[in-house]
Amino acid sequence: MFLRYFVKQLILPPGGLLLLLLAGWWLRRRFPRLAAGCFLLGFAGLWVMSMPLAVEWAARLLEREAPLAQAEWPALAGRAEAIVVLGAGRDVADPGWGGDQPSLLAVERMRYAARLAGASGLPVLTSGGLHFGVLPPSEAALMAEGLAADFGVAVRWREESSRTTWENAVESAAILKAAGVRRVVLVTQAYHMPRARWCFERQGLEVIAAPMGFMGTPNARPGGGWLPESRAFWQSSQLLNEVAGRLLYPLAYRSPAP
Image (cartoon, rainbow, N blue to C red; front, side, top):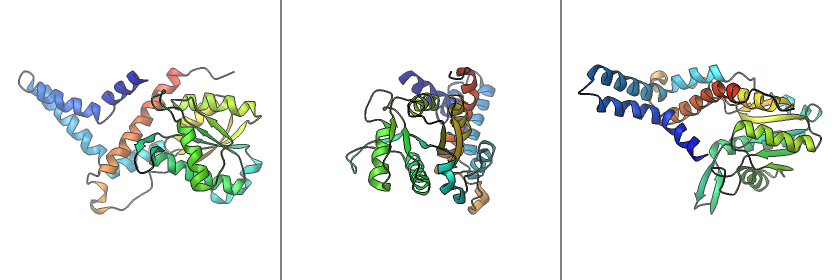
């Protein structure tokens, strides 16, 4: 788990782009043309990833699942048997809360799942394992606590051993099938939904997609979205991570569960 983390941080931005800039500086005397190319690629990558316009364009390519209309929420009880909300990381040891808390992305998912649960009456499963796979509490436990305390939603099941989206699906499916559940409403960010849905359907579950947190919607800004923003860079990093996941998952997980 730790090796995977370090490799990921070195390859994906900003790590990979910073390495290009470092290579440009290191090679500047012996290979000036190559150094210039590395510098330009690194600088251009940082600039493009910081542009809100680039985020909107890239997100529209990834956000393929349609939103679930609010008018459909009450009828979900007749179409599904449970709501599954996926973990999205944590804020570690927040002094204001006295411990770990769900990340902002996770709280977005929790809020949406709570609305769906309130409208439909469906039971909820939270999915997410330990910090780096070894340090408690689990993301599922943090989300369950937050759903109960902040949204008044009691979580029926917790899947607490997964470390990846694929493991979210494998471990959640085992819990749900043991409870006789085969049809689920899946809650995650819109850009993440196609890969998450693929994983859950490979486990033999019928999925109703409930994507939220869309990034591809037009957002008027001064400069038309060409000026760099720190939030845009973070969003671009999330989208690039998703692109990598979509490319690698079909290669790493070829066989569906029995």
